[in-house]
Image (cartoon, rainbow over all chains, first blue to last red; front, side, top):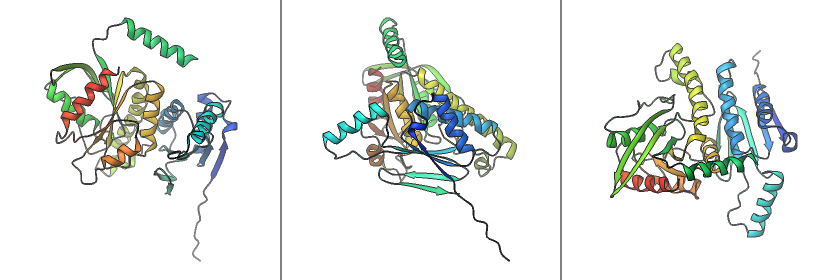
Length: 129
Length: 211
């Protein structure tokens, strides 16, 4: 009997409130621990630029030390505010200042599973291996 | 609070220390042509190239620099320290190098050096006075690495110039790069063929003036 093996895909949604009070190191460690567990992490919100840079730095350090770990695929999807009125833009920037970029979504996955994240302004495609 | 203090102390330092030359970093993803552009500048103005160029990604695996590059352009002179950095990526797989005919032990060594090079590139960001982002005009500019690099420069208040390199390629699309980064000036060049270098030098002087 031919047996087809189906591989599962594990997604983990991480509400921003779960990482909001963590330091940069703790946030990055939490995300990378999930990615090392072969999970695709979807964060409700976006990391700050320095956190994204730290995520890349720590990923590279792990590639050097963890067998079969080749890195991550990372993408941020943000609401398109082009053409929206000033009130909407103001509301968005105020919310961003007060509670972080909660309207954005950040996708982080192990590059062994997510081959590529194709991003255009209005859509995102995850190409799996 | 710390950022405000850091920013204030940087401004204060700049006010009282007369800089002899600015540090201009060349950043971007692997294989975008950072070293090709750095080589063209160095060869034109110092007579010597700065590094080796290759079709294999991550050829530059250490930060390399040239002190006091002096450019004379349209009656003006710009002296700067040119810092060429390894391409920043989020993944490194040694198997990718095997496709270029590199043997397994060398591919593994190259991968290890490449990961360290990326860490080095990121750590050098803080030291830059201005940055030239070199992108491959034939590739999709909406890569998160590009956005992360630019986001970090904006957060550090470091002036940025975006170069859409490889305009000699049929697939090159400067408009796409411009629409990805509408807040920045984008200059299309071919570092390999020396196309549009005049506009590049104009923009480089403007960039240095923002420091």
